[in-house]
Amino acid sequence: MLTRSALFLACATLAACGQQSPPAAPAAPAVAPPAVAPPAAAATFTRKAAPDGAMAYIIEPVDGATVTSPVHVVFGLKGIGVAPAGTDRPDAGHHHLLIDAGLPADLSLPIPSDDTHKHFGGGQTETALTLAPGKHTLQLLLGDHLHVPFEPPIASSVVTIEVQ
Ligand SMILES: [Cu+2]
Image 1 (spheres, rainbow, N blue to C red):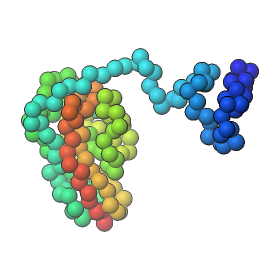
Image 2: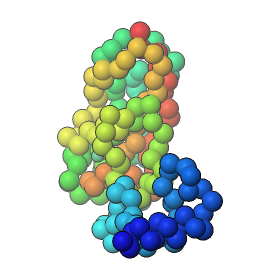
Image 3: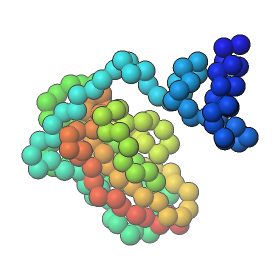
Image 4: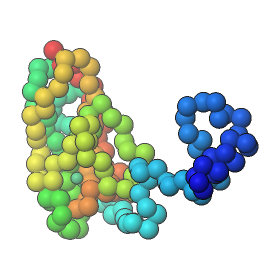
């Protein structure tokens, strides 16, 4: 009943009630926050400082290359070392490959793990990537032992490839 009356109240104040999308009204305490938002106090991460001059780069394939799948991708790193995920070593991290994805919007959080954000938590420095034919972008982003990007982020240039 509370939800119902809250909704009614929201409807009374919002002209957009005829629309399907639920009102994103901040003034609706009865509605639980969206599941995607992490609880505020769940965890906070301290981004490690990137060592001076540290950089990530994609050795292979080169930007503009036409390749066949599986695509051999070789990761390059300068000024910082590689350590497996979970191993908290100073000045070391592990690679993440962003496939057809930009840098995460919030770099204070662990890098997502999905089809477009691949973790190389074993400390790998290369991979064979199965990609559909067409244009794709690749970018490396180094994360610390908790998969959190460094400050400033150690990310490679974006490499655009054409998969035949
Ligand atoms: Cu990771």
